[in-house]
Image 1 (tube, rainbow, N blue to C red):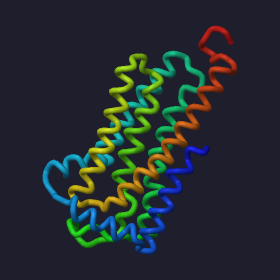
Image 2: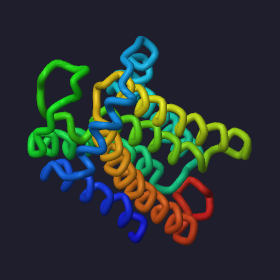
Image 3: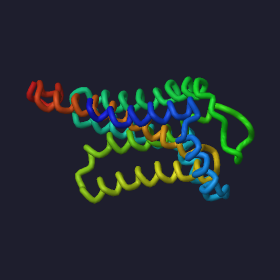
Image 4: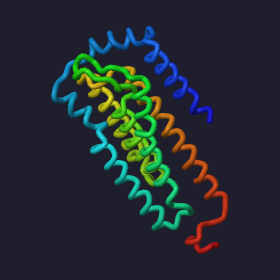
Length: 212
């Protein structure tokens, strides 16, 4: 549970600064001015955080994990994919009220509007690609493939984050808050699935192992 402390603390700190218009917000706006350079490449990168792109990737991973677990007779094979889906469902449930409460305006690169904090696209990317990676890693035997999957996950999340800031869709702090919120959900997923896996390995064998 201690793992949840740092991302929660950072999220609370950033949110407090956004709400009170603190010094971090001034720094954030100056940084955005230096980074925003809207172009086609940044727009394509930002699209990696779209629900239409990230969620189908997660769904494919969840379907594979469920099918693999059921085929091998894993005890409670349904729990990891169900937990991954729940983590994804929590993203809009958490982000939407936070956007309404903080009421933060967008950058000068987007039409005048409010509700940009935290970045839902960033949180979606972190949870979708991160949950897919967490659930697929135990099923991969090759260390090289495992490393490649982690690198791919990091590249997708960082690419989406950079694109959102570069295109001007979000302030850097919006994206940083999305990282923190996504990290909290992924740590919760890891703790739930990890504990379940440890109980399953130490407890009663599954019904399809032939030993029960």
